[in-house]
Image (cartoon, rainbow, N blue to C red):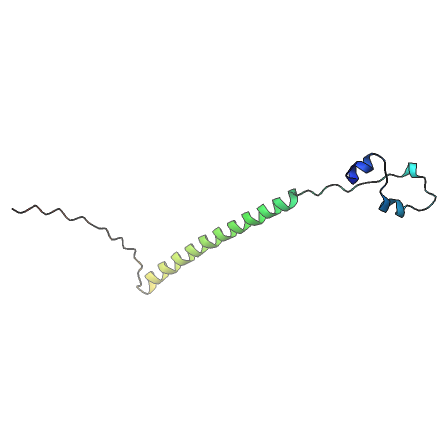
Length: 101
């Protein structure tokens, strides 16, 4: 019997608990109740919910920012004549020169 759990299952009362028992108590009628081991399910689920919520909030902020920017550009282009263009430059390959003799 190395562990306190094994001692309690075997019916032995540890010394620290034995000192707390009032004098004159029948030791055969004592029941020792142990605390259940801690469950880590709650904190893990809470961390996952917080992470998922943070990602969702960041995605919503990015989406709203994109919509606001697009609407500002469209309003400015309609009222002030400011335009916003995206230019895509393409690199054209030059035809190879013929070898001159």
